[in-house]
Amino acid sequence: MNVVIPTEDSQMQHIIEKVRHGQRLTLEDGVFLYQSDDLLTIGQLANEVALRKNGKKVYFIENMSLYFTNVCEAHCAFCNFRKDEGEEGSYTLSGQQMIEYVEQHYHPGVREFHIVGGHNPHVPFQYYVDSLKALKERFPEVTLKAYTAAEIDFFSRISGLTYREVLQELMNAGLQSLTGGGAEILSDHYRKKMRVDKADVIQYLQVHRTAHELGLRTHTTMLYGSIETKEDRIRHMLHIRELQDETNGFLVFIPLSMQPINPRAGIRRRNSAFEDLKTIAISRLMLDNFQHIKAYFINIGVQLTQVALTMGASDAHGTIVKEKISHAAGALTPEGITREDLIWLIKGAGRIPVERDTFYNEIKVHE
Image (cartoon, rainbow, N blue to C red; front, side, top):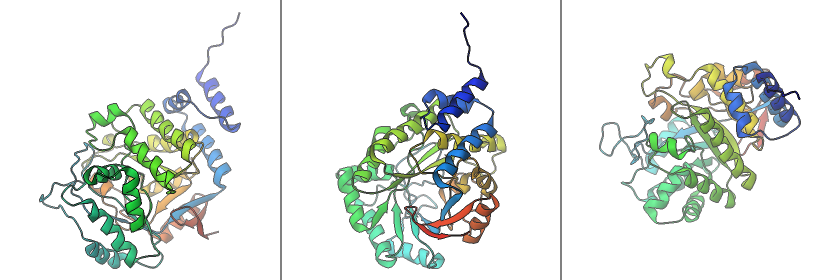
Protein backbone atom coordinates (compact mmCIF):
# COMPACT_ATOMS: atom_id res chain seq x y z
CA MET A 1 0.00 0.00 0.00
CA ASN A 2 1.32 3.45 -0.90
CA VAL A 3 1.05 6.13 1.76
CA VAL A 4 0.86 9.61 0.26
CA ILE A 5 2.32 12.22 2.58
CA PRO A 6 0.98 15.68 1.69
CA THR A 7 3.70 18.10 0.66
CA GLU A 8 3.52 21.86 0.89
CA ASP A 9 2.88 21.99 -2.87
CA SER A 10 0.00 19.52 -2.68
CA GLN A 11 -1.54 21.36 0.30
CA MET A 12 -1.40 24.64 -1.57
CA GLN A 13 -2.91 22.96 -4.63
CA HIS A 14 -5.73 21.60 -2.47
CA ILE A 15 -6.46 25.14 -1.17
CA ILE A 16 -6.36 26.56 -4.71
CA GLU A 17 -8.91 23.96 -5.83
CA LYS A 18 -11.19 24.73 -2.86
CA VAL A 19 -11.13 28.47 -3.52
CA ARG A 20 -11.76 28.07 -7.24
CA HIS A 21 -14.70 25.77 -6.58
CA GLY A 22 -16.21 28.08 -3.95
CA GLN A 23 -15.46 25.77 -1.03
CA ARG A 24 -14.89 27.31 2.38
CA LEU A 25 -11.40 27.30 3.89
CA THR A 26 -10.82 25.81 7.33
CA LEU A 27 -8.74 26.86 10.34
CA GLU A 28 -6.02 24.47 9.15
CA ASP A 29 -6.06 25.98 5.66
CA GLY A 30 -5.67 29.49 7.07
CA VAL A 31 -2.78 28.53 9.35
CA PHE A 32 -1.06 26.77 6.45
CA LEU A 33 -1.33 29.92 4.32
CA TYR A 34 0.26 31.97 7.09
CA GLN A 35 3.09 29.45 7.39
CA SER A 36 3.73 29.44 3.63
CA ASP A 37 6.20 31.92 2.15
CA ASP A 38 4.53 31.70 -1.28
CA LEU A 39 3.10 35.21 -1.14
CA LEU A 40 2.64 35.44 -4.90
CA THR A 41 0.37 32.38 -5.07
CA ILE A 42 -1.63 33.50 -2.02
CA GLY A 43 -1.94 37.02 -3.42
CA GLN A 44 -2.92 35.79 -6.88
CA LEU A 45 -5.62 33.56 -5.40
CA ALA A 46 -6.96 36.44 -3.28
CA ASN A 47 -6.93 38.65 -6.39
CA GLU A 48 -9.07 36.09 -8.21
CA VAL A 49 -11.62 36.18 -5.38
CA ALA A 50 -11.66 39.99 -5.28
CA LEU A 51 -12.17 40.20 -9.06
CA ARG A 52 -14.94 37.62 -8.86
CA LYS A 53 -16.74 39.65 -6.20
CA ASN A 54 -16.16 43.22 -7.38
CA GLY A 55 -14.59 43.14 -10.83
CA LYS A 56 -11.89 45.79 -11.12
CA LYS A 57 -13.76 48.26 -8.92
CA VAL A 58 -11.99 49.62 -5.82
CA TYR A 59 -14.01 51.77 -3.46
CA PHE A 60 -13.20 54.89 -1.45
CA ILE A 61 -15.11 57.55 0.48
CA GLU A 62 -14.67 61.22 1.33
CA ASN A 63 -14.74 61.10 5.11
CA MET A 64 -13.46 62.82 8.23
CA SER A 65 -12.20 61.13 11.41
CA LEU A 66 -13.47 62.85 14.56
CA TYR A 67 -12.46 62.26 18.20
CA PHE A 68 -14.67 63.87 20.87
CA THR A 69 -12.51 62.77 23.80
CA ASN A 70 -9.20 61.02 24.48
CA VAL A 71 -9.93 60.47 28.19
CA CYS A 72 -10.24 56.72 28.76
CA GLU A 73 -10.69 54.38 31.71
CA ALA A 74 -9.07 51.49 29.82
CA HIS A 75 -5.28 50.96 29.79
CA CYS A 76 -4.78 48.73 26.73
CA ALA A 77 -1.08 47.94 26.33
CA PHE A 78 -0.92 48.98 22.67
CA CYS A 79 -2.67 52.38 22.99
CA ASN A 80 -0.87 55.71 23.06
CA PHE A 81 -3.99 57.78 22.30
CA ARG A 82 -5.64 57.56 25.74
CA LYS A 83 -5.17 60.08 28.57
CA ASP A 84 -6.33 60.32 32.17
CA GLU A 85 -8.69 63.12 33.15
CA GLY A 86 -6.63 66.24 33.88
CA GLU A 87 -3.46 64.84 32.29
CA GLU A 88 -1.60 67.17 29.95
CA GLY A 89 -3.05 66.82 26.46
CA SER A 90 -6.36 65.35 27.62
CA TYR A 91 -9.55 66.83 26.18
CA THR A 92 -13.31 66.37 26.02
CA LEU A 93 -15.04 68.44 23.33
CA SER A 94 -18.62 69.64 23.40
CA GLY A 95 -20.82 69.23 20.35
CA GLN A 96 -20.34 72.91 19.54
CA GLN A 97 -16.55 72.67 19.80
CA MET A 98 -16.56 69.68 17.41
CA ILE A 99 -18.77 71.58 14.96
CA GLU A 100 -16.25 74.43 15.00
CA TYR A 101 -13.44 71.94 14.24
CA VAL A 102 -15.41 70.31 11.44
CA GLU A 103 -16.27 73.66 9.84
CA GLN A 104 -12.54 74.42 9.52
CA HIS A 105 -12.00 71.28 7.40
CA TYR A 106 -15.41 70.53 5.91
CA HIS A 107 -16.34 70.72 2.23
CA PRO A 108 -19.58 69.60 0.56
CA GLY A 109 -18.06 66.34 -0.77
CA VAL A 110 -17.67 64.86 2.75
CA ARG A 111 -20.10 61.96 3.11
CA GLU A 112 -19.14 60.37 6.41
CA PHE A 113 -17.97 61.26 9.90
CA HIS A 114 -15.95 58.41 11.42
CA ILE A 115 -16.30 58.96 15.18
CA VAL A 116 -14.37 57.09 17.89
CA GLY A 117 -12.74 58.08 21.16
CA GLY A 118 -11.85 57.19 24.70
CA HIS A 119 -14.11 55.52 27.26
CA ASN A 120 -14.53 58.67 29.35
CA PRO A 121 -16.31 57.82 32.63
CA HIS A 122 -16.38 61.47 33.74
CA VAL A 123 -19.26 62.34 31.40
CA PRO A 124 -22.70 60.64 31.29
CA PHE A 125 -24.02 58.53 28.42
CA GLN A 126 -26.16 61.52 27.41
CA TYR A 127 -22.94 63.35 26.45
CA TYR A 128 -22.27 60.75 23.75
CA VAL A 129 -25.88 60.96 22.54
CA ASP A 130 -25.78 64.76 22.41
CA SER A 131 -22.46 64.70 20.53
CA LEU A 132 -24.10 62.84 17.64
CA LYS A 133 -27.25 64.93 17.82
CA ALA A 134 -25.26 68.18 17.46
CA LEU A 135 -23.41 66.90 14.39
CA LYS A 136 -26.55 65.52 12.75
CA GLU A 137 -28.43 68.78 13.23
CA ARG A 138 -25.58 70.83 11.73
CA PHE A 139 -24.62 68.36 8.94
CA PRO A 140 -27.79 66.34 8.21
CA GLU A 141 -26.49 65.05 4.87
CA VAL A 142 -23.36 63.41 6.38
CA THR A 143 -23.57 59.77 7.55
CA LEU A 144 -22.67 59.22 11.21
CA LYS A 145 -20.49 56.11 11.51
CA ALA A 146 -19.82 56.31 15.21
CA TYR A 147 -18.39 54.37 18.14
CA THR A 148 -16.86 50.92 18.44
CA ALA A 149 -18.53 47.86 19.90
CA ALA A 150 -16.28 48.37 22.95
CA GLU A 151 -17.67 51.90 23.34
CA ILE A 152 -21.24 50.59 23.10
CA ASP A 153 -20.44 48.08 25.86
CA PHE A 154 -18.95 50.93 27.93
CA PHE A 155 -22.07 53.07 27.37
CA SER A 156 -24.20 50.13 28.52
CA ARG A 157 -22.19 49.87 31.74
CA ILE A 158 -22.30 53.59 32.62
CA SER A 159 -26.00 53.99 31.72
CA GLY A 160 -27.47 50.72 32.98
CA LEU A 161 -29.13 50.26 29.57
CA THR A 162 -28.97 47.11 27.44
CA TYR A 163 -26.99 47.09 24.18
CA ARG A 164 -30.25 47.34 22.28
CA GLU A 165 -31.43 50.33 24.32
CA VAL A 166 -28.06 52.09 23.96
CA LEU A 167 -28.05 51.57 20.19
CA GLN A 168 -31.64 52.75 19.83
CA GLU A 169 -30.88 55.93 21.78
CA LEU A 170 -27.90 56.61 19.53
CA MET A 171 -29.89 55.79 16.39
CA ASN A 172 -32.54 58.28 17.50
CA ALA A 173 -29.73 60.85 17.73
CA GLY A 174 -28.50 60.08 14.19
CA LEU A 175 -26.27 56.98 14.40
CA GLN A 176 -26.27 55.11 11.06
CA SER A 177 -23.38 52.62 11.36
CA LEU A 178 -20.81 51.33 13.87
CA THR A 179 -17.06 51.55 13.34
CA GLY A 180 -15.05 48.33 13.44
CA GLY A 181 -12.59 49.11 16.25
CA GLY A 182 -12.33 47.46 19.65
CA ALA A 183 -11.96 43.97 18.18
CA GLU A 184 -8.14 43.85 18.47
CA ILE A 185 -7.68 40.05 18.49
CA LEU A 186 -10.80 38.08 19.45
CA SER A 187 -9.03 35.82 21.94
CA ASP A 188 -9.54 35.90 25.70
CA HIS A 189 -5.89 34.93 26.29
CA TYR A 190 -4.69 37.80 24.10
CA ARG A 191 -7.04 40.29 25.73
CA LYS A 192 -5.84 39.36 29.20
CA LYS A 193 -2.16 39.54 28.26
CA MET A 194 -2.54 42.86 26.37
CA ARG A 195 -4.67 44.38 29.17
CA VAL A 196 -7.63 44.91 26.86
CA ASP A 197 -9.86 45.94 29.77
CA LYS A 198 -12.93 46.59 27.67
CA ALA A 199 -15.52 44.44 25.88
CA ASP A 200 -14.51 40.76 25.73
CA VAL A 201 -14.91 38.45 22.72
CA ILE A 202 -18.54 37.54 23.41
CA GLN A 203 -19.50 41.15 24.16
CA TYR A 204 -17.84 42.50 21.00
CA LEU A 205 -19.72 40.01 18.84
CA GLN A 206 -23.00 40.54 20.71
CA VAL A 207 -22.90 44.31 20.18
CA HIS A 208 -22.53 43.81 16.43
CA ARG A 209 -25.20 41.08 16.41
CA THR A 210 -27.61 43.45 18.18
CA ALA A 211 -26.75 46.30 15.81
CA HIS A 212 -27.42 44.03 12.84
CA GLU A 213 -30.76 42.96 14.35
CA LEU A 214 -31.69 46.66 14.57
CA GLY A 215 -30.90 47.11 10.88
CA LEU A 216 -27.47 48.74 11.20
CA ARG A 217 -24.74 47.61 8.80
CA THR A 218 -21.38 47.71 10.58
CA HIS A 219 -17.62 47.44 10.07
CA THR A 220 -15.15 45.11 11.77
CA THR A 221 -11.39 45.02 12.27
CA MET A 222 -8.44 42.88 13.41
CA LEU A 223 -5.39 44.49 15.03
CA TYR A 224 -2.50 42.14 14.25
CA GLY A 225 1.24 42.10 14.83
CA SER A 226 1.92 41.79 18.56
CA ILE A 227 1.76 38.68 20.75
CA GLU A 228 -0.98 36.77 18.93
CA THR A 229 -0.27 33.54 17.06
CA LYS A 230 -1.15 32.94 13.41
CA GLU A 231 -3.86 30.57 14.68
CA ASP A 232 -5.28 33.40 16.82
CA ARG A 233 -5.63 35.52 13.70
CA ILE A 234 -7.44 32.80 11.78
CA ARG A 235 -9.73 32.07 14.75
CA HIS A 236 -10.52 35.80 14.85
CA MET A 237 -11.57 35.66 11.19
CA LEU A 238 -13.69 32.57 11.89
CA HIS A 239 -15.54 34.35 14.75
CA ILE A 240 -16.36 37.18 12.37
CA ARG A 241 -17.25 34.81 9.52
CA GLU A 242 -19.69 32.88 11.72
CA LEU A 243 -21.48 36.06 12.78
CA GLN A 244 -21.65 37.19 9.16
CA ASP A 245 -23.25 33.82 8.27
CA GLU A 246 -25.84 34.54 10.95
CA THR A 247 -26.64 38.21 10.23
CA ASN A 248 -24.98 39.35 6.98
CA GLY A 249 -24.59 42.70 8.73
CA PHE A 250 -20.90 43.47 8.13
CA LEU A 251 -19.95 45.74 5.23
CA VAL A 252 -16.18 45.26 5.26
CA PHE A 253 -13.30 43.61 7.14
CA ILE A 254 -10.34 45.84 8.00
CA PRO A 255 -6.99 44.26 8.97
CA LEU A 256 -5.09 46.83 11.05
CA SER A 257 -1.32 46.55 11.20
CA MET A 258 -0.10 47.17 14.77
CA GLN A 259 1.97 50.34 15.20
CA PRO A 260 4.85 50.60 17.70
CA ILE A 261 4.33 53.03 20.59
CA ASN A 262 7.34 55.12 19.52
CA PRO A 263 7.37 56.83 16.09
CA ARG A 264 11.16 56.44 16.08
CA ALA A 265 10.90 52.66 16.40
CA GLY A 266 12.94 50.78 13.80
CA ILE A 267 11.63 48.39 11.16
CA ARG A 268 12.07 45.35 13.42
CA ARG A 269 9.37 46.78 15.68
CA ARG A 270 6.91 47.04 12.80
CA ASN A 271 5.07 44.47 10.71
CA SER A 272 6.86 43.69 7.46
CA ALA A 273 5.32 44.52 4.10
CA PHE A 274 5.29 40.77 3.46
CA GLU A 275 3.18 40.17 6.60
CA ASP A 276 0.79 43.03 5.79
CA LEU A 277 0.12 41.84 2.25
CA LYS A 278 -0.22 38.24 3.36
CA THR A 279 -2.77 39.20 6.03
CA ILE A 280 -4.90 41.14 3.53
CA ALA A 281 -4.78 38.24 1.05
CA ILE A 282 -5.58 35.59 3.66
CA SER A 283 -8.46 37.72 4.97
CA ARG A 284 -9.91 37.78 1.45
CA LEU A 285 -9.61 34.00 1.17
CA MET A 286 -10.99 33.15 4.63
CA LEU A 287 -13.88 35.64 4.67
CA ASP A 288 -15.82 34.28 1.72
CA ASN A 289 -19.06 35.90 2.97
CA PHE A 290 -17.62 39.45 3.03
CA GLN A 291 -17.98 41.69 0.00
CA HIS A 292 -14.96 43.85 0.84
CA ILE A 293 -11.51 43.71 2.47
CA LYS A 294 -9.99 47.11 3.21
CA ALA A 295 -6.36 48.15 2.78
CA TYR A 296 -5.89 50.84 5.46
CA PHE A 297 -3.21 53.23 4.21
CA ILE A 298 -2.90 54.89 7.63
CA ASN A 299 -1.23 51.71 8.96
CA ILE A 300 0.49 50.21 5.92
CA GLY A 301 1.27 53.30 3.81
CA VAL A 302 -0.09 54.45 0.48
CA GLN A 303 2.32 52.51 -1.74
CA LEU A 304 1.67 49.17 -0.01
CA THR A 305 -2.05 49.95 -0.16
CA GLN A 306 -1.71 50.23 -3.93
CA VAL A 307 -0.05 46.79 -4.13
CA ALA A 308 -2.73 45.35 -1.80
CA LEU A 309 -5.35 46.23 -4.41
CA THR A 310 -3.91 43.40 -6.53
CA MET A 311 -3.86 40.99 -3.56
CA GLY A 312 -7.45 40.89 -2.38
CA ALA A 313 -8.31 44.40 -1.17
CA SER A 314 -11.27 46.16 -2.82
CA ASP A 315 -11.44 49.22 -0.58
CA ALA A 316 -8.82 51.95 -0.15
CA HIS A 317 -10.63 53.67 2.77
CA GLY A 318 -11.03 57.42 2.48
CA THR A 319 -9.67 60.92 2.78
CA ILE A 320 -9.81 60.98 6.65
CA VAL A 321 -8.35 64.56 6.94
CA LYS A 322 -6.52 64.04 10.27
CA GLU A 323 -6.11 60.58 11.83
CA LYS A 324 -5.00 60.53 15.49
CA ILE A 325 -5.06 57.04 17.05
CA SER A 326 -2.51 55.21 14.87
CA HIS A 327 -0.36 58.34 14.71
CA ALA A 328 -0.36 58.60 18.51
CA ALA A 329 1.02 55.05 18.43
CA GLY A 330 3.84 55.79 16.02
CA ALA A 331 2.43 55.54 12.49
CA LEU A 332 4.74 57.18 9.93
CA THR A 333 2.09 57.49 7.21
CA PRO A 334 0.14 60.60 6.12
CA GLU A 335 -2.67 61.67 8.49
CA GLY A 336 -4.99 61.99 5.49
CA ILE A 337 -5.02 61.91 1.71
CA THR A 338 -6.76 63.91 -1.02
CA ARG A 339 -9.53 62.55 -3.18
CA GLU A 340 -7.36 63.13 -6.27
CA ASP A 341 -4.47 61.15 -4.78
CA LEU A 342 -6.80 58.25 -3.92
CA ILE A 343 -8.08 58.15 -7.48
CA TRP A 344 -4.50 58.24 -8.81
CA LEU A 345 -3.47 55.49 -6.40
CA ILE A 346 -6.31 53.17 -7.44
CA LYS A 347 -5.85 53.79 -11.17
CA GLY A 348 -2.13 53.10 -10.78
CA ALA A 349 -2.99 49.55 -9.69
CA GLY A 350 -4.98 49.02 -12.89
CA ARG A 351 -8.26 49.31 -11.00
CA ILE A 352 -11.38 51.47 -11.41
CA PRO A 353 -11.86 54.00 -8.57
CA VAL A 354 -15.42 54.15 -7.28
CA GLU A 355 -16.47 56.90 -4.89
CA ARG A 356 -18.96 55.38 -2.45
CA ASP A 357 -21.08 56.23 0.54
CA THR A 358 -20.79 54.43 3.91
CA PHE A 359 -22.94 51.54 2.65
CA TYR A 360 -21.02 50.98 -0.62
CA ASN A 361 -23.65 52.61 -2.78
CA GLU A 362 -21.78 53.97 -5.80
CA ILE A 363 -21.66 57.78 -6.03
CA LYS A 364 -19.29 58.16 -8.97
CA VAL A 365 -17.24 55.75 -11.07
CA HIS A 366 -13.94 57.27 -12.26
CA GLU A 367 -13.31 55.31 -15.46
